[in-house]
Each structure stands twice: as C-alpha cells, then as structure tokens.
Image 1 (cartoon, helix red, strand yellow):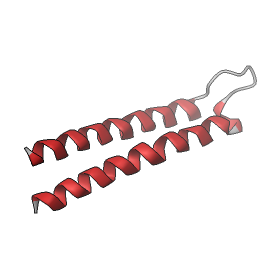
Image 2 (cartoon, one colour; image 1 turned 120 degrees about the vertical axis):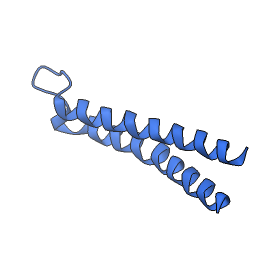
Image 3 (cartoon, one colour; image 1 turned 180 degrees about the horizontal axis):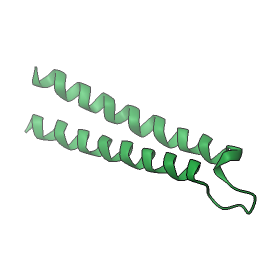
Length: 70
C-alpha cells in the first residue's frame, strides 16, 4: 500500500511539473494576459498564482513520497 501511495504522489508531482509551466506559457501568450499599456492583467496573475500553488503541491508530494519510503 505504501508503494502505491509513493507512485501516486510521484505521478501527481510529475504531472504538475510538466503541465502547469506549459499552461502558463500559453496564458502569457494570450491577449488577455496584458492590457493596452502592456502591463500584466488579473487574468495572468490569477493563473500565475495557480501555477505556483500547483508547483508547491508537487514539491510537497515529492517530500511526502520520500518520507513514506524512509
């Protein structure tokens, strides 16, 4: 059961690390990411916060997986 938990945690972490930065790249290329003056909009900032949270969860998942193995 512990091996299963470790695999699930690591797969989730890998998914977050692969998917979210690529998603943020697409968001930053979106016209809604900047206003008429070229400044970042709330649309971009909200997705940046989501990306940071997802990467933080990924890091916590890796730590939890390592602790389960110890």
